[in-house]
Length: 175
Image 1 (cartoon, helix red, strand yellow):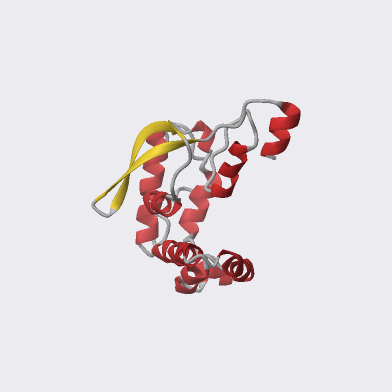
Image 2 (cartoon, one colour):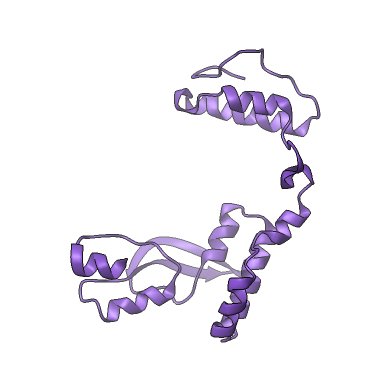
């Protein structure tokens, strides 16, 4: 895709990727330039410096970003295992194995309750009713926040209070 845009369209484009192999294209495509976000490692973690610099990242920070995004520990653990396998310079054989063994979420799914894994409804009826009646485009940020708190409260209690029947949740309407 990058080669086509470079050679045929000659358009400006921005690609954000963790595929370091694509950075090698910059050596043979004259109008392609690589830039990276500056990162500093500190106390066993990474700090994103919010600065753009010419060049490519020296390694992937995708796992750090996933951790910051709040992905489940099982998913992050699987990603770390895949990365370690790739870094052991078993790239060709490891990639073949990974292509056949990509249940990245298998460990997390095994820990989910049966209802959440698809065996039945996982949400209380009150939560389903609220989600069915809410009009997200009509909500103010404050109303959306109130709905989130209400949904969280309903998920924490077995019964909760259902909104009145037929009620549509719109802008400025607390749940």
